Image (cartoon, rainbow, N blue to C red; front, top):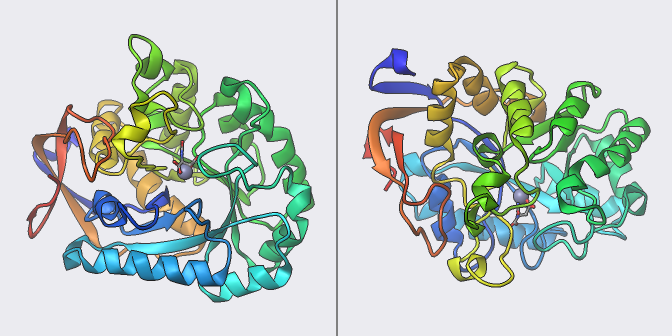
Length: 350
Ligand code: NCD
Ligand code: ZN
C-alpha cells in the first residue's frame, strides 16, 4: 500500500465470523461493520440461541431493522447461521436451510460465551451433521476441547475433527478463529472440504500483549492469543495465498463492565479497527497482494457465493480508535491507525 500513496480502492471484504448479539447493542454493533464489509456471517450464540426457524426469523428481522438505520452505502449483507444442539432432527435442519441459513455452528459444551448448551461430541449431533452434508450446508466449528489446559485446547480438539472429516467427506467444514501453529498445519494438510477463518487479533497480537506487562481484558478471547511462533504460522498461512484460509473477525463485543470486572467475558470487539489494522500490518510485511484475496475472495469461493461487486476505499489519514463504541471497548482503542476506511460519501469511520 505504500506503493499506492495515499488512497487505495479494493473489493469490499467479507467477514465470515461475527457476533451482533440481540436486542440492546445490536444497532451499535452493526455500525462496527458498516461501510467496511460486504457480507457478514452472523454467529448464533445469541440469547436465546438461533436454533430454530422461529428464532432465525426473529433475529433476521432485528438485524434488518438495524441495517435500515444505516445509510445505504454502509449496509452489509447479513448471512445467517444456526446453533447445532443435541437432539436436533433432520427436519429441523431442513427447515433452517429453507429459511436461508447457510451454515450451522458447532460449539463444544462450555467452550466459550453462551455455549453451555452445546453438544459434548460430534456423535451427539450425527443426524444434524449428516443432513447438513446432504444439503450442502457449511459446518463452522469452535475447535477447542474445554477439558484441556486453556493454551492447549485448540490442538487437543484436532483429533475429533480428523474423525469427523473421515466420516463426512463431503461436509464443507470451517475451523473458526485459528490460533495455533499446529492447527494451521492441520488445515493445510487436510482435505479440500476443510478451511479455516483467521481473525485480525490472532494475526496482530500474542499472549504477551494480553498479559505480558499488564492485563488487558479487551484482548481476552477464545481461543486465547498464543505465542509468536503461532502468530507467524497464521501470518504465513495468509501470505501463502492458500484458498483454505479466509477472514473472520470474530468481532465479539461485550459491554465494558462485562470485560473490566472479576470474571471477564471472552471476546474482542474487533470489527471497527480490524481492516485498517490489517492493511497496515500486511503493508509492513509486504503482503498486501495476499491480504486482498484472504479478505475478499477465498471465503466467498468456499461458501459458493459470487464475488462482491462493491468496492471500498482506504485513505492514509490517521485516526484514533475511539475508547468506547456502543458501550464496548474496540480493539486498538486509543491507538492511532494509519489507514482509514472512507467512502465516496466521505469519511465513514469515527
Ligand atoms: C465469542 C462471543 O463473545 O460470543 N467469544 C470469544 O471469545 N471469541 C464466542 C466465540 O466465538 O468463541
Ligand atoms: Zn466467535
